[in-house]
Length: 199
Length: 108
Image (cartoon, rainbow over all chains, first blue to last red; front, side):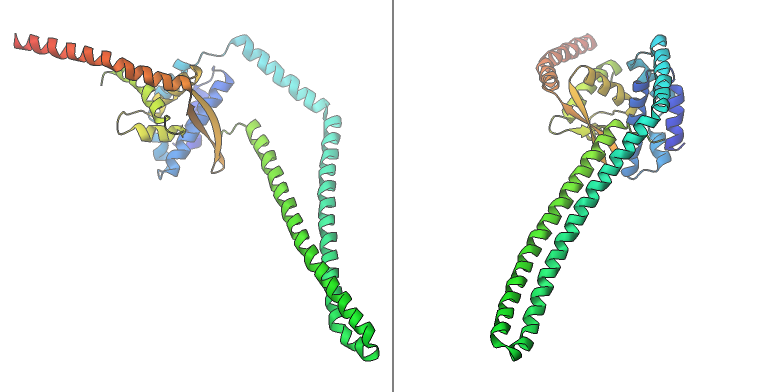
């Protein structure tokens, strides 16, 4: 028997217990099998070493009271109600969701364009400075003072470019870090809500 | 070992496995295996009972793309270990009593 077969069998044998109780048990045994496999056992071996499934079921049932009939019915009713609500509400929540999505994309696009603009400025500074410095001897032929002025201006431009490159890189890194942080927060919130039962 | 005696010891053993640092199910079984044999199916109700009695708390940690439940001993759990150790003198007295009584009977 492999892991998913085992968990399915366990699930069917636990019928009648509270949903949360079943979920907890399945999570527990799923984790145990995963840990044994991670420790070098084959999946089938790991399942076999858990012992007799009926004993496992007995141990679980001895600890947890069976679900109350009325509660179960109400739960199913609730579920249907929620599904109907979701379907009926779709024109509202779907458009809200899309709008939210669009806002998120707009924010990202804005941030991206700011970063691109900053980098363009840096490149312009550096290129302009470099061209001015390199090209100034040609101007010096016609007018020495203008040439010297152009060298100075080029150097200043280039210096500005280096400074702003430094700042831009730091800012970009910060933005990326913040983005990763947001992503992790989001993922964690998402993971918590989702109970992980791998069948 | 007698099943009933083992049952009481198991809870304290599991709490002891958590005493130094938080741990997860499979590691609890491995850490205690040199001393006492706990199977997965025995551990599960013990953990549930200890959790509902507030002797330990549970939290999840992401590990290799799945969630692993970690157990943390509470102050109440540490107290339970203390009580077990304090009560051991009593157990030793009983042990002595059993030893002396049965040996005396054998000698008679």
